[in-house]
Amino acid sequence: MKNKFIPLTVFFIGLTSILQARADVSLMAARVGAEDVLVAAQFYVKAFGLIEVDRLELASGKAELILGFIGDNKQSVANMGPGIAILERESDADAESMPHIIFRVSDINAVYSKAIELGGTEVQEPMAINDLGITIAMLRDPAGNTIELLQQL
Image (cartoon, rainbow, N blue to C red; front, side, top):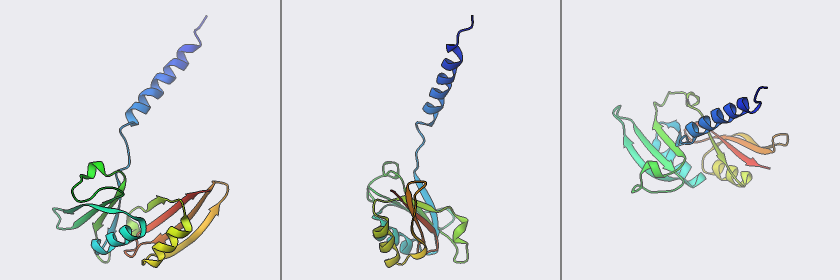
């Protein structure tokens, strides 16, 4: 008689090793581009409450600002949690050549309105997607990068 538990045990051992291998993976930041990184950073600071964590001068001569939800210039990027890296780009570069940022919010209407008021451009006003249990909105930051706002219903 075959032991029915052997395949199940092998499955759970495999699943456990997959989960352990992924345990050290987390989001550090999303990168967007801007011709003027300082102006773009101020938009994210004022609209979404991020704080400048680090300012880099890359070997290419381009500037990059790292923003996070905690920290200041005295803290390391490693301790900031998920954030946004704003990389300097040429003025004629396509903003859509970089992925967009998704913020989870608790009051989508207030956050969307504030972002538009601070210079964001409307793309999609808040819209409930009842089948998924979410409300989403889309806008562009002043540098043309796409931002998605998501609120659980």
